[in-house]
Length: 100
Image (cartoon, rainbow, N blue to C red):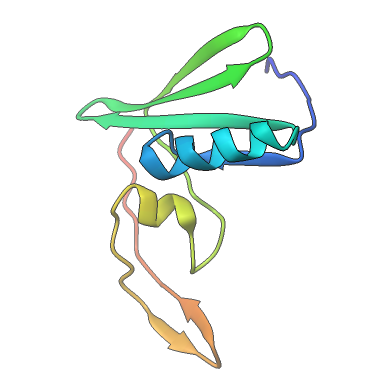
């Protein structure tokens, strides 16, 4: 596994109008940030990460958003929530079949 560990104050997922506006505003305030753009097609997902050395693209067959029931990634990718709330927490249970 190849990885580079870095630290920023803010990581923005989504380089659409809202993400870019936020990035510009934070940059004007000298806040250290990184911007990740996500594009999906029939074969998978491409994530573009802006780094100090330029953009880096990562291609993957699957993107896992494991950031909870109020997932920004799920909302950004326009994936509906098919679950129920319980004591203020959102829960989902699904059965998955794996081939291969």
